[in-house]
Image 1 (cartoon, rainbow, N blue to C red):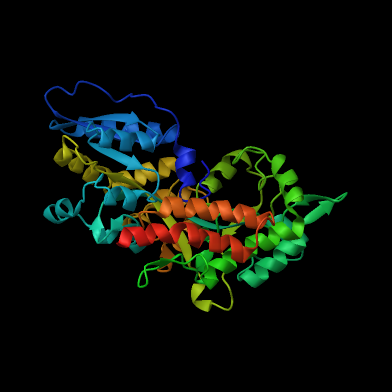
Image 2 (image 1 turned 180 degrees about the vertical axis):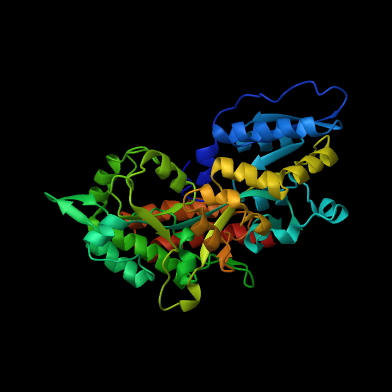
Length: 423
């Protein structure tokens, strides 16, 4: 499953209403309806754990439902008929839903039961916190690294991955190839999500003191500039033509697997797919390069989490909490994250031997454990903010608007939302 950005995780995991394999009677036990967003192998792994929980005790019975449409969760909450427990594929809507009162704060449960939030990585805790209250428990975590084709780098005379953005630009230039005027190898697929590498420039999207959005922040601007430079150097038409011929993500025809991309930024879930579908590929992963003018940005990066939460109006919040507590314990978290190819957000789980069998996970785990990892700011308008950034970056990359103009448009569109919220 590809997770090219925080909010697009949802698009990958989402789908129509799924099956309900764990539904059963449960006898006289307290019933907990659990809507989760994992489909396919993720649903299978979750159902296995639900069955294990149901067999482990005689007080609570969990009915699982693979329900990928998060908007249906909100509709059910507003309609007064929510599930007792639900999951979100990422935290981008957590602050918005918390602001609307659609999620129960979990702090009383955490304190009463002595639940160890300190075991979570600081960035994972931050991702589920809004206005100093905890609204979710992370179950899985994602981060992004630089994938590089070792054979292509060696052919170009490089004996290792780039460490700085300045080196990255040189690599990209030398690794990009054209044949008969057409681009056949892109030195670096820059993607369209600069928030994933804005930390490399110490970029920021929010000023908490001034309560202002900061799309024109020099660091964020530099991350967009890098993407724009690659698009403009090769030409949008050439890049579009190359993209049009790309095979299915993670398949043997994946553009990184076939050498169409010499380098790309991607998450930990891609490595198991390549191991399965392109075992001949000679590649490795490295930390996202940093701007040498910002040495503090070395090993900085971006993370997001998937999470469990209790909706407002849940009939059985206490029973839902007990299942959450059980499911997010180290052993169950490790089992689930291994099955779906995600990183564990608990520090105590990161050195579990089971992850030694997952390709490249040692690199991702070490990188994710950096103190410089950050989620996106927890802001109620973040989904709209990122949507506007995406819209303008596409225009910038295609030369329809200048970098300055595009980012000014983002500020012009989003800051009024902040001003209205602060009144």
